[in-house]
Image (tube, rainbow, N blue to C red; front, side, top):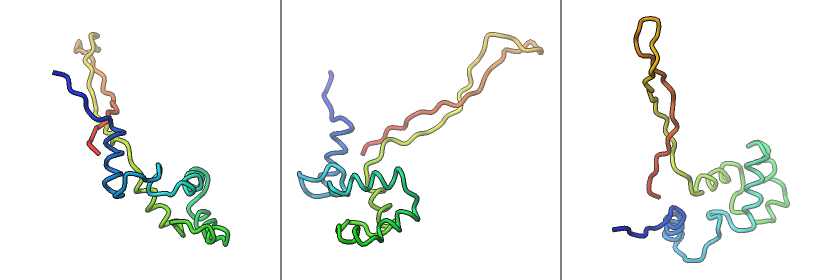
Length: 119
């Protein structure tokens, strides 16, 4: 019997609704809509020291952001949903050729595998 289930997106969405206690919440919780573009730009283009300097500017203080320095900003970033963890396993592949000692050769290589976990 095949049963329809929730997608990862729907499980994450439900988790966010439960965590933030409302059906209507910004798409980039914990950031407010207007903050998301700034947050994304800071993470992509600015060092942590420069983030502190930027957030200390009077214009940003007037913007009433939900974070006031780099430490508070990074705490917000850490609250964003995360994808699955990655693990790495060594795999040994048996060959069909003999080495100089007439033994079958093998090769070891690492295989990155996704570990799925529920949200």
